[in-house]
Length: 413
Image: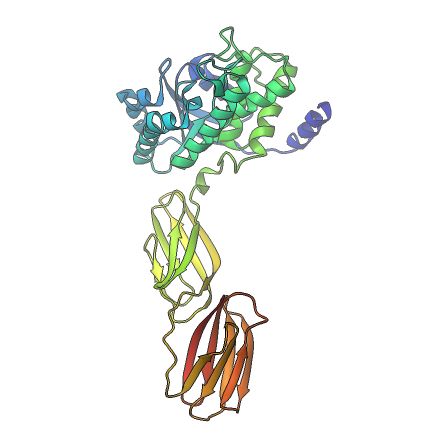
């Protein structure tokens, strides 16, 4: 472990940063107010050459419902264009059964997040992942041990963040790392629930890493801890947070918008499902010269094939672009015209094509991805198409002569 600490220190102390400034509103309860987590985080931040502007709204034992029902909460949300608004509920709340969380917590978390974005769309909501009690909670079996309670708190915090497109300050996960690797460091107050000075300092290190996406290693502010203990807690926060930025959905304030989409082929064309995050408007380029500003457009292509589709997602803070190759296989093709060609099915893999005009014709076979399988000119009026060596799927038979062009869709089962 000493090797890990020394290696990390050598890497992080070779990097210098310009001063960053972040504003934060902490909405929480005693897990935030005991030992004054906001001020501890600010002091740590200053010692690292950065700046934290903050305010807090802490009501002892407050659940998310209590926060959502308190007028002062909204007054403070609207008082400043916060970069981050941190949400922390009652310490046991997110360890309860999933159905209970979904009815008693999630609606109020969503209400608070809506208020934050309504006040300043560019603010980022951050879920404060708290820690399991020292010996678990005897209320029910799933949280009767520390490990069981911590697992539920971790999973719920991440799930709530996903639900409201928020980030996570994973204090509970860093707490678990320290408990596992440095059991001699007591992170708890005498009540086995609230944080000790070391616990609050650990939370501050975690918040610094999450808010700034920078390492707290080397901070000269160590509260009332000895230097060795402070260094361990700094390294723990850096390791858990910075190695998993995507897991905690931590990104730059100027990089919140994410363009994402999926698509499906159907009889009417290609349906696009927009799964973008933190965006208010969209611009689609379908790769065939057509475009749309709909959220979830349905687009019909003139012919089957592969198209380069681009989605630009925008809001007042940011923009993001995603470009992918879309394979269109949904075009409904009309039946062959009897006055030029005749198609007969000989069996599941053999087809007979006859040119009724007797002219030389070009026969091409294209797969569902738009790839040309084979193409050849034929002078004989009759030809047999053999698909026995081809995999199952959709194929397009294209027939052309001097006066006629037709495409036939064949499904090989």
